[in-house]
Image 1: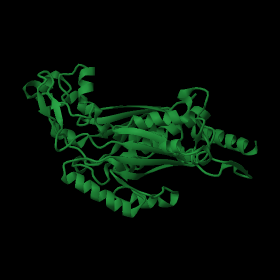
Image 2: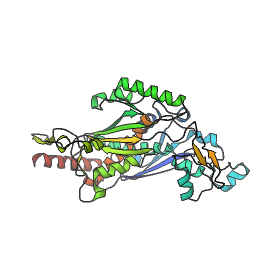
Image 3: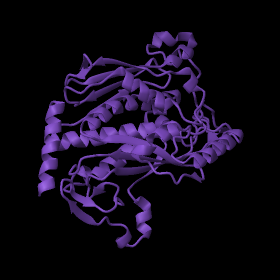
Image 4: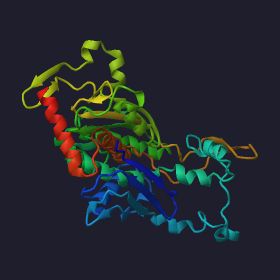
Length: 388
């Protein structure tokens, strides 16, 4: 089996983020410009904080690509943190670098963050060690890796996109279709419904004024994903299980559903299942897509539809109660620069992790050391299933 896997390293205010992506077939066209566009999408969105005006993310490809094509070797991607210059010796690597300038330790954990759990888990006497790695800044490296996965999926006819369907109590009735993609990309909330977007912006403004934050719901769709990927034979090979794990790996995600999701629990079976049919030239088809493109852990060929629930940003301008490490004294929580709402930006990260999961599953199913090898195997399977 061939696997697409990645690792990231680096701190929020360190010198750089680094990603290693292994398993990409040779012969895939990859450009810095395409990755930079996705990094810019991640930095936009109504409700983002001040840091996005400081950073202007750009990728440097330092391995695995030659003359614009992957070579089969691991890709090495680097994203510099421009804000690192403002942090002086706070994140010094060598003990001698810190010297007398060593920063005061952070001892007050913020509710809702990894601060307390991380400090106890790794026996840290300075929560800064936790804050820097647990930060959602790490997702920029995943977005860069996700671009490569998107390019591989596009080669097999699949396109991954997302839109916001709820921020706070405001909900959109808009649908994501190939025709609505440009509308979503031009909207500050990445919402397909203009009226709902206006209400969402009003809710974000009200939360900012109140010193509060908002979460929401994002829908991610993979159009044109091949059928027959995944398996029912073991739980961890079910495509839906792999997708759920990927979504929940993104900071602040608290729920995931596929297709009708939780709504299916309140409906009779006749309104949940997708009737089957057969069309010449297309093969087996479904009259609806309530399953969200996955049945029995296997892709159906219909669009894969995933929704993720994101909690409000945990850092609040009006701090909650906390306890100081060591003294156990009751104190107000700390404030670190943060967004009021990161739901629109989170959609870009979710596109990346979904693309990485789907591309990995394609390679798991069809293998191939080169892109033409993968394409030939996908087309052979499609041809077989259409005539079965």
